[in-house]
Image 1 (tube, rainbow, N blue to C red):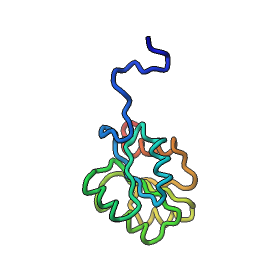
Image 2: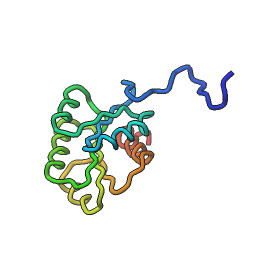
Image 3: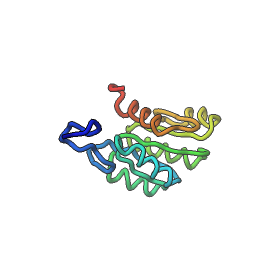
Image 4: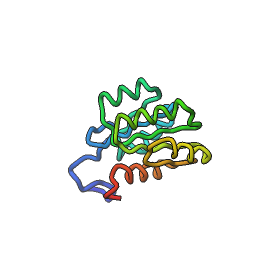
Length: 139
């Protein structure tokens, strides 16, 4: 007998790392934030992490992400070059998360990104934004 909290499906829920989940590549210098994102978003997304152009290039040689998320505290020239390099490699949606509002206008003018988030962003809000970018017809 199943309890009310059990699933009635014979299929197990997808788990982080399941190849059936859409891959989201996170470009972030802070692995701790990525680890937390993996725990919070792993039910819907398979997450990859890169903190350098070399690791990012490796991901693009071996995978085709459904979306790319950049986390920037202060988007300097190197950060903007990374976004441009990703845009040249993929047509996947790009979301840029910025710490401060004053950078948003400059980033939006200089880069072909699909979404910009500013300030604190909860994982449920990030999940919703990713769904809107990756599955726009279902949102």
